[in-house]
Image (cartoon, rainbow, N blue to C red; front, top):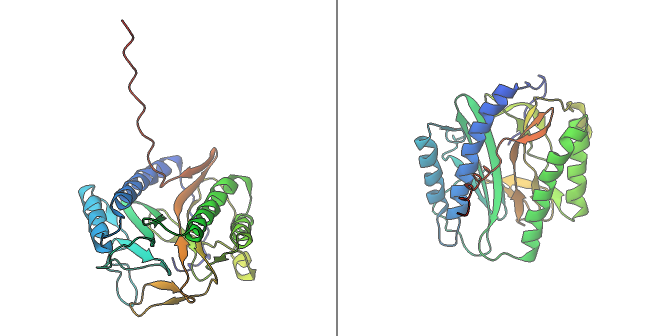
Length: 275
């Protein structure tokens, strides 16, 4: 998402509030499960978006993207960004085809609390280099999850994220960053996936109760981006592929709680003893 201000300190959440955010996160994870099932060659992106909208409505959850203010309000409950589209793509009649990279970003509010997640799905058979791009972006998000309990300042995490991307031969998008999240989708602080003089000035401490939507955006070549005429869709300037992944993360005294993690399957029922 767009840069936010870091003028106010992050709002730290209690264990009870994190539990409420986790309930919203479970819904977002289930929405993504619907997307994964539908994301096949021949499917229109608008049909996936409509299925997610129906799912949120059936669970009394408020989709947070539809109507989001801008030059024109965002028209859908998901962002669907394909290939060279980085973020904020608008679902429509475009049909998925073999070899596409589909980025799906969606968020909802449930009982007053928000959760936000993005994934990148390879459609059919994609090239090895595209698969490597997806893997590196996912590894970059994992670095954040692993390091948040072990570092004092966010810049220490972001520098490791940036280093991993660049060592892999790819580029970090610097025009867009993650964000704090809680009662509203965009809270302080802004959460960059890189470090420079500007971000160091707005650095923040990592302490229990902080909740962050961490969302690395990784381009195959250069990190420069442009916005299309629809006022939303962000594309790589060189039109090379990009990958976007995101989880809502909470730092607790026991480590990181992944608010938007997939639900664990229920344990198997115990077998009846052999007579």
